[in-house]
Amino acid sequence: MKKLYALLIILSCTTLIACSNGMKINGHNARTAYKSVKVIKNRLPAEQRIEFEVSFWTIRDSFKDDDEFLAKVDGKEPQEVINLGRELYQERKNAGFEAYKQYSSWDEMIAKFGQERIDQEKSHKEDPRDKANNVLYKLK
Image (cartoon, rainbow, N blue to C red; front, side, top):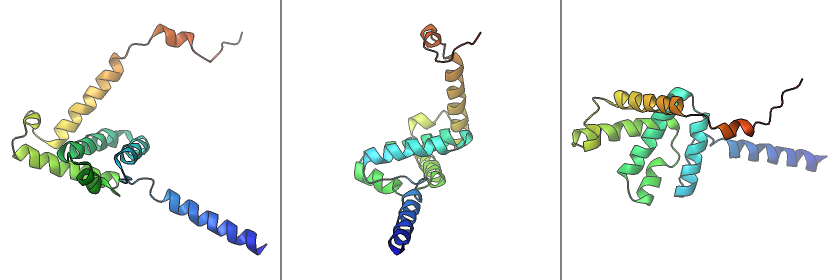
């Protein structure tokens, strides 16, 4: 009985430790960083997803060296990534980065990307083969 109780405590602690970093980027290597970003992105509310994605890729674009990039994002939560992305945007805009000249602010850029995403989803035409692969059956 004592062994079972001790095993239950160990399993509970292990589960809590394993789940505690669910919303932090694992920067052990590039593969785990990308995988954790994908998981985090899917857990975020819709209004934060695009800002998080743009921030992450802004950071990635700013730090070409993998080790430097992973050091910047390792252990960061979504809001920390967004804040760092905003800072880098402003630094690059002030330095005359060509791609940012068309935007007056970070919020305008995010709004434009959000609108582009909505337009892409609207323009996506349904493939007739998708209807043929429907697993829902009509009962008579």
